[in-house]
Image (cartoon, rainbow, N blue to C red):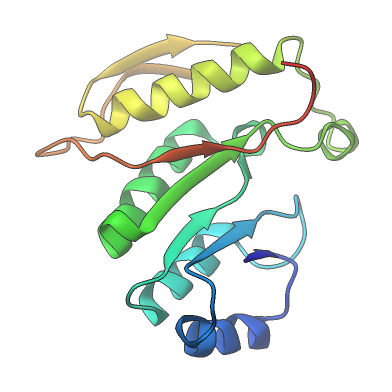
Length: 159
């Protein structure tokens, strides 16, 4: 099932209490850029309210979030839900990004770079990188052991 951050908090509460009695085995939470509930709070709430459902962000645009925040949020959500959490990411709707003044010269390259950085941080590495969207210098999450979170893409277009 797919929902968005623009749903009412009462719907979040209802979903958390009733989702596992439905015929769905997973829930994707799409981020409506600039609208509604915070994607990370909503996802954590639903992970805490359910016991077996797979809960995924679908999709968090790496273009509208700090890359460190994405990696840290993914780590926190993994700690809450373990194998039930799926990290969904993508570029975001180009019309929404344009409205925010964000234009990417190479969106596919940007997505590859963002996923590479997040995966390296989750592997426990110190990361130094400079790209069109983000810059890190010897940043680490200081993990005791690596985490393995499935990453799904929400993308449009020929590439």
